[in-house]
Amino acid sequence: MKFIPSRAWTVPLAASGLLLVACSSGEPAAKTSELSSVESSASPSSPDDSGSASSRPTPALTPRLDSIAVIGHSGATGTLSDRQNITRDAHENSWATGENPRVRSIYWRLLQDHPAMEGHNFNAAVNGSTVNDLESQFNALLLEADPVPDVVLIQTIDNDQRCDGTDPDNYSPFAKTLDDVLTTIEEEIPNVQFYLVSQWATVENWTAWAANDVEKVEQNSGNGPCDVFKENGQPSARGMRSMQAIVDAYWARVESVCARHDGCFTDHGVQQQRFMPTDRDVAWDRNHLSIAGHRKYAEIAWSEFPEQIKSRP
Figure 1 (tube, helix red, strand yellow):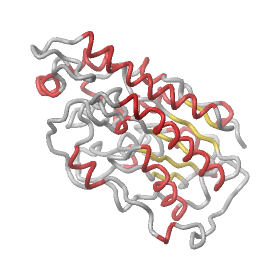
Figure 2: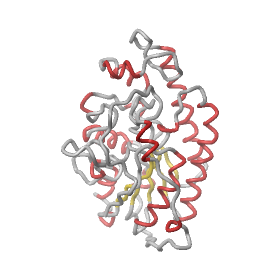
Figure 3: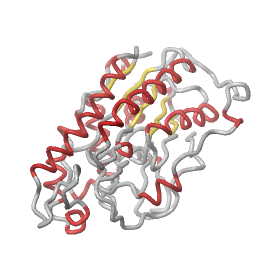
């Protein structure tokens, strides 16, 4: 069984002129992987009364590791990874909960030693999401997931980055909202465990890859805090330092918040250091991950996946 949110992004992407404003493919800087038009139309709305605690059905809570879920943005939905049908979110290709053996997702890998997990992989991520949307995704998840997830994977940050000079003002609100979400999930699911993942590639490595793409260079040139190319199209050391500082500041909040919750783990920023982007890793929009990219992301995520979860009965 797979949960497919009704608000999922089901229209093809168009070219974007945004410069490092919001991303949801897991990249370090937004790098145009989310479009403003898509974000405004696809961003989740508040849950209705059907998602309230009083009317919510009671899913099974089992002692064994037999259910997993992911919430977050389009980095987890598999969007655009199905080359035969780019209008849908290909959840089967998700690095997190996908069933496609070519991807070898976290779910697929856990399933090898936890057969009771089969079919209990729930994808409630929604394209264009920010940290503010995670709780509504979780509320929707509880209406569909049975048994309730023992492990909740979370992929966020990208769309929260503003890159307009106001990111320092957003660090604390971002952290508080994430903290509140983890607390809410813990209250609903006793002994739940979390795994929070980082954005793929360092800013420097992403810039080196993007330098051969004329459109990417044009989109990410300027003098703003996230412009990694100069006006003449050459890499900007200042812009890369500024962008990386923003990325690191958000990730530091993720690490700090997670440390305050029992059963919460992060990948320690390993995607930043080990994911070296290539053309093969990206979908046709050159922002979201292809099947090969999801496989690479899953492999790196698994390398830091906590033994405390792997060893659960």
